[in-house]
Length: 457
Image 1: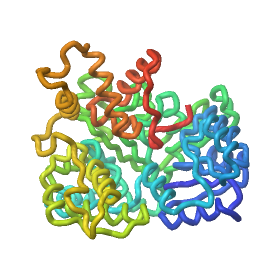
Image 2 (image 1 turned 90 degrees about the vertical axis):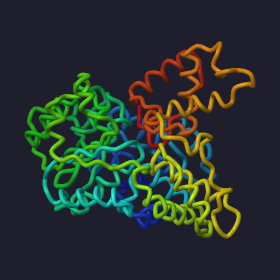
Image 3 (image 1 turned 180 degrees about the horizontal axis):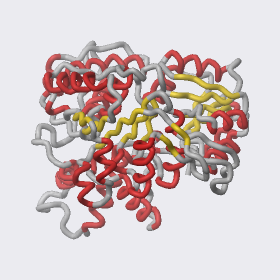
């Protein structure tokens, strides 16, 4: 996790930086907005920017948007800065971090935005086999395509491959192709020259150059627009990139890892993914199995999350009772490790005794059912809530109305996170965004985007 601090390190913001460092973050610092922008353009990128509200945070947000620098900006200030904080949020700051900083709040923020650097948990033979395959290819220079359902831990596996590779001392740069809008992604990957487009007032280094000597992870590669795929293919083949507006190619030394939660072969047949790029990425395929196929991992994962969220929330650690663990081990976990993590986090907060008992484990209404598409489960919940005597609870409603309610309910459940909601619904992030634009235009209130999805517009 790369964190940029914009402001003085001598006061509360410096304490926030020290907390972030203790949680494994790599810190860069700038005293004011213009030096911060210069660092961002020069390739000393950041996954999140913490900016003092006493500085020109509105100027920073506007410049990042104009120059297509996709990183969330967090406004930081004391209670006395309430007016400035409100202005910063209106200008596009994604969150407000009150000062003096709270260690648990910063830890949660870092975990929400990016990977936590932990090694994969593997106790089940199926997962152990996947991990052995990952370690077998880690030392090579081959591109690796990591497949798996949403929430299985594909990025965790990618980081593990990087740590075991000969490039471990170099940077690990992750780009979420689903979360960054199409009009920003090209500049985010390849950078741009001064004057390349309106707002490009200086040269900006992209993620390829930032990852030079290390590893570049293209997360959810299937969501990349097919027009941009051609430029990506050339960058991988020739080991050089062209900045937007540039006249000379730039040599890069980067290992490519990519993840997908959809079969790329089907996308190739549909014409939404280039076949030549598929073969270039698919030198080695690694599949992260779903949690239901690795049941022996449930207990160690659950215990790890119980420790983590007790610490994050400042609560005493409570072990998971045997009957609660048996309940967890019988679930299909359609949301995989991410769903288990959320369940344990909730249980840590709800538990009242010396252990986490089954009464603290809140599960979906259709627990224990054979795994089915998420949309079927959501429709089942709508049916379950139907008035008595109504055979389906859907009679008299249009398909469009049911679809809209399903999408909005799922988005609310995911706390506004578009990427997670699209995965649960079984649709692409592009389709989800198009639907949400339709609803907004029709005057329907749409949940605000979650932090991990937010980028300057």
